[in-house]
Image (cartoon, rainbow, N blue to C red; front, side):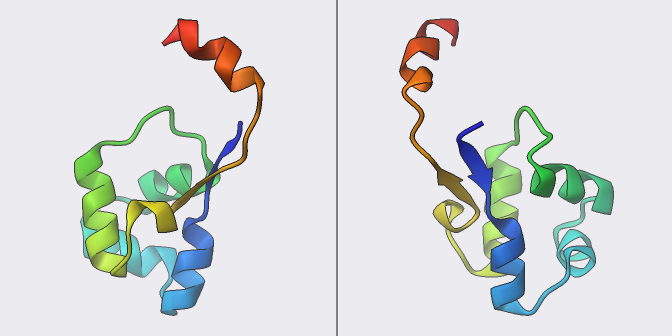
Length: 78
């Protein structure tokens, strides 16, 4: 999948652990771990907003995209 979660890099830059972030956001460590690993199929904007507020960052600091021409073929699926 060409969308890559870069949360680990942001946590490192902020000197914060996933455990601390989860507690600060009021979510379980399991939920945060699933997001970090890219195993979630969706995430609420409100959750991303809380994550950004806790890390003082933007959504673009948490996600990256690597172009894949096949994504253009999959446009009909959504």
